[in-house]
Image (cartoon, rainbow, N blue to C red; front, top):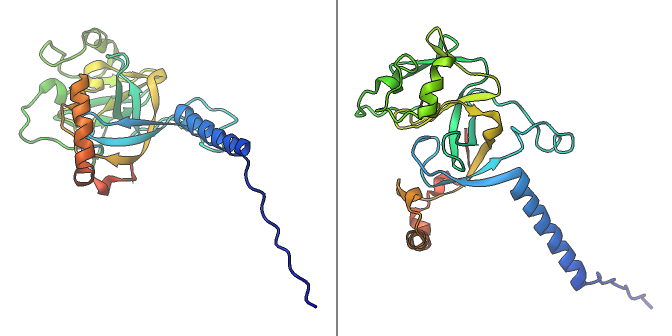
Length: 254
C-alpha cells in the first residue's frame, strides 16, 4: 500500500509579525527619505534644457556629504567636481533650495567674455548651455567680472561689495570651501554672478534622476495661496495623463 505523502503547511504570519514587518518597511523608507534621498521640484527655467520646470527629481544627499565609514560601501562619497549639477540652499535667500551646475571649485579662476566661460584660462565647450538670441545684451552678465556690478543688474548688495576682493587679473577666484555655480539657461539664470559663491555647508546633494515630470506654468512656484495650490492640484489630477512628460520619466540627470 502506497504511503501517503504529507505536505507541511507554512505557518501563517501572525498579526504581531505583520505589524513588525510593516514597521521595518516604514522605518527603512523614512530613513532613506530623511537621510539618503530627498525629492525636489524644479521651479524655474534656469537649468533648461537639462532640467525643465515641473521636473521632479530625487537628490542623493550622501554623495557630497562628509565621508563616513558606515555608509561608504553603499553610497560612496566623492568630492564635488566641475560640471556636477548640485542642489543647495541659496546664500542670498534663506530657506530657498536652488539647483545649478558647478562651474568652479576652490582655486579655480573664472571669467566670461561675450557669454563664453573661461576657466583657468581655457575656453569651455558647454553643449548643455542655451542662449536666447533675442535676449538683450547684458554687459555685466556676459562679461563677468570685467564689468562692475550696478543697481540695474539685480546683483545682491552684499555680493556687489565683496566681489572686488575675489578678482585677480580679470578672473574671479573661488575661495576655499566654496563653489561657483551657474545655470545652463545662461541668459536667464540668477546664479553666482549675482549673489556670490555657494558655501560648502549649503550643499544638499546631487540630483540623480527625474521620477516624474509635469507641464507646469513658469510662475507656479509664486502661487502660494491655499486656493491657488488646491487649484493646481486639481489641474494635475485632471490632466495627469495628458500633461505628464512621460519621456522624461526615470531620466538620469547629468
